[in-house]
Length: 296
Image (cartoon, rainbow, N blue to C red; front, side):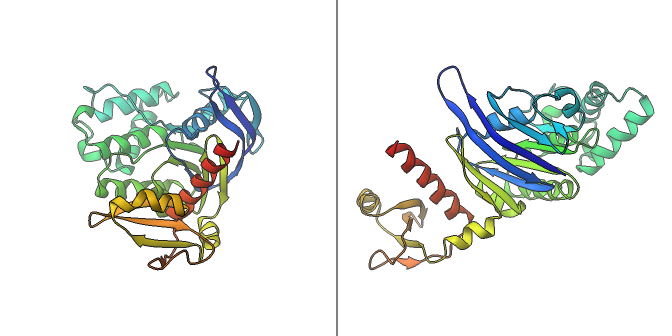
C-alpha cells in the first residue's frame, strides 16, 4: 500500500502559493508531515481528504486516483481535521452512532457493535454516556480518532492532533496512533517536532509550500553530525549573534537564550558541539527555505 503525490500545486486567488510542486511517496505506517504554521500542510491534507481541489499534479493510492475518484476515496478515508466540531450536548455514544449512520452503517445491530468496539478501543467506554461538552481536550481527540476509524479506513489523516494536550493525554494519543498505524497509512500533520520524533519512521518537512526534506529522520539527523553548535548567551547579545552566525534556533534555559547555530567548523570560542536531533533538522531546513525566499 502506497500513497504517491506528484507535482501537486495550489495557488489561492489572493496569490498565495500554498503548494509548489509537492512530490511525496508515503508508505504504510505513521508518516509525519512537519512544518510551521502557514507552510501548506492543511492545504495538502484537505486535498488528500477530497475537500479541496488542486490546481495541478496527481495523487494515487495504489490504483485509485485520489483527485478524480473522490467518492471511492471517501469510502476508505478517515479524517480528523484540526478543528473537529461536534454537537456538544450529545453523548459520545449517541454522536458516534449518528456518525456511523451517516457513513453508511444502516443496520442497527452492526452499527451498535461497531460503535461499542470503537469506544472501547479509544478508551472512552466508561464515559460513553457523558456529554461531549464535558470532555477534556485529550478525550475529544480520542473521540475524533474513533469517528475517523469508522469503516476501517485504509488512509487516516490527522491534522495538528496534539496541540493543546497535556503530556499525559499526548502520550495516550501517541499510543493510539501507533496502534492504528500498524496496518494503515497514517499521515500526521503537525508543527510539533516532538510528535514526529516520538511516532514516525518517515517524515517530510514542508515550508512555503515546498518539500524541504523527505525520508527517514535518522538520515537527516546524521547529515548534521558535527555541524550544530550551541552556546548560552545573554539576551542582549542575541541580535549580534544572529548577525554573525547562522542561528537556526534559540530557546530559554534558566532564563537565558541557548542558541544553536549551523556551521561546518567550530564557529567561535565558547561554543560546544551539540548532538543534533530532529528539531535541529527542522529549524535548519526552515532557515534554508527562508534564505532561498530572500534571495528570490
